[in-house]
Image (cartoon, rainbow, N blue to C red; front, side):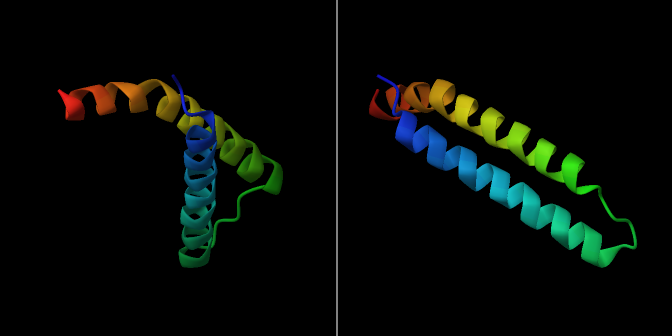
Length: 66
């Protein structure tokens, strides 16, 4: 059974990590990213990380317990 709460938390962690990485990139360079692009991509990363966590997580637990 999929732990959707844990998957959602991993999604939030992934999205926030992306935003921190992008902020560091903007501070280190003179390139500014449009806020709509920034948050749209962060949303896509959040969804991707949550889905990937929900799909791969149970398989990893099976391998550890085997």
